[in-house]
Image (tube, rainbow, N blue to C red; front, side):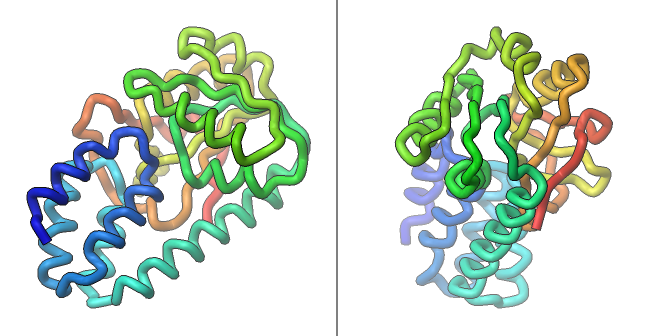
Length: 227
């Protein structure tokens, strides 16, 4: 495996969520030795230090947990998170969200109640455009793509806000795509519940190095639904 080719491909993953990136990493390293896999993942940590899930993968590789088992743990954690979210949020609602989260995608696919979903375009990067297309293609929910500047309009119309997270920190803060903090502030202003959907693989300390990520303080978060 050409390590530099892997880094070049990884650097182009700009619209994918952390679950998608974790699966991509595991597929890339599944035929490597533990030492080679650790070397690659440690370097990837430096490229995207905001993503706690990469640190989670590295921690398991240090214990020499095989890739097949890591993939199973990843899937199980996601499944349990979706199960818990469906128990808490199993009602018809109008929702606002941001960015492109595989965890939210699975929630929207599995909930049987009809939802109206406002998806912010999530500039820079436009991940929301990709996310809106995925939801429209896979569900019967009413999906509306809106400009980031219209955030306050759709939040006021929403029953709650639901976002994913790239990392959940020990103090209860989260790291997510830029715009998430403003979304939380606006939700707080309109007294709308602000929920974060994040499985346990995201619960690792991290720091936002890239300007497209930011910290959302725990005081703005109503609750974190996890596995």
